[in-house]
Amino acid sequence: MSCFRLVPISEWVKSHGGGQIIPMSVEWEQQLWELREKPAEREAFLGEVAGLKSVLPRIVKVGYQVLNLCYYFTAGETEVRCWTFPAGALAPECAGIIHSGTFPTINLFQISNDSS
Image (cartoon, rainbow, N blue to C red):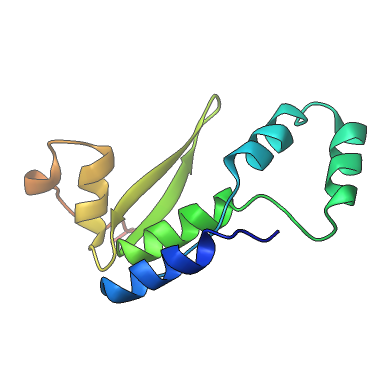
């Protein structure tokens, strides 16, 4: 895909401190999304644009990097959740994200199987 707007956008970004540009087409992403439950039509659509794929995962990944964030997942029987924390945060800080309000009073315990 080629976009005549990409060059002036790139020049503007460079003149304002630089940064990564991720071109995307909202219209194309919408068409791909609408085919999510139609595998045959989705494959045909992607076949027309050899090699193209959604840029949304890349936008999320680069966004986390630029904002200096990390994430981890927790899973239960009924849900999976993604938790975001600042890069370099310690385990008690991350636990405080899940268990809001408990960070200042987190206790660390060591469990031992020692029979003495």
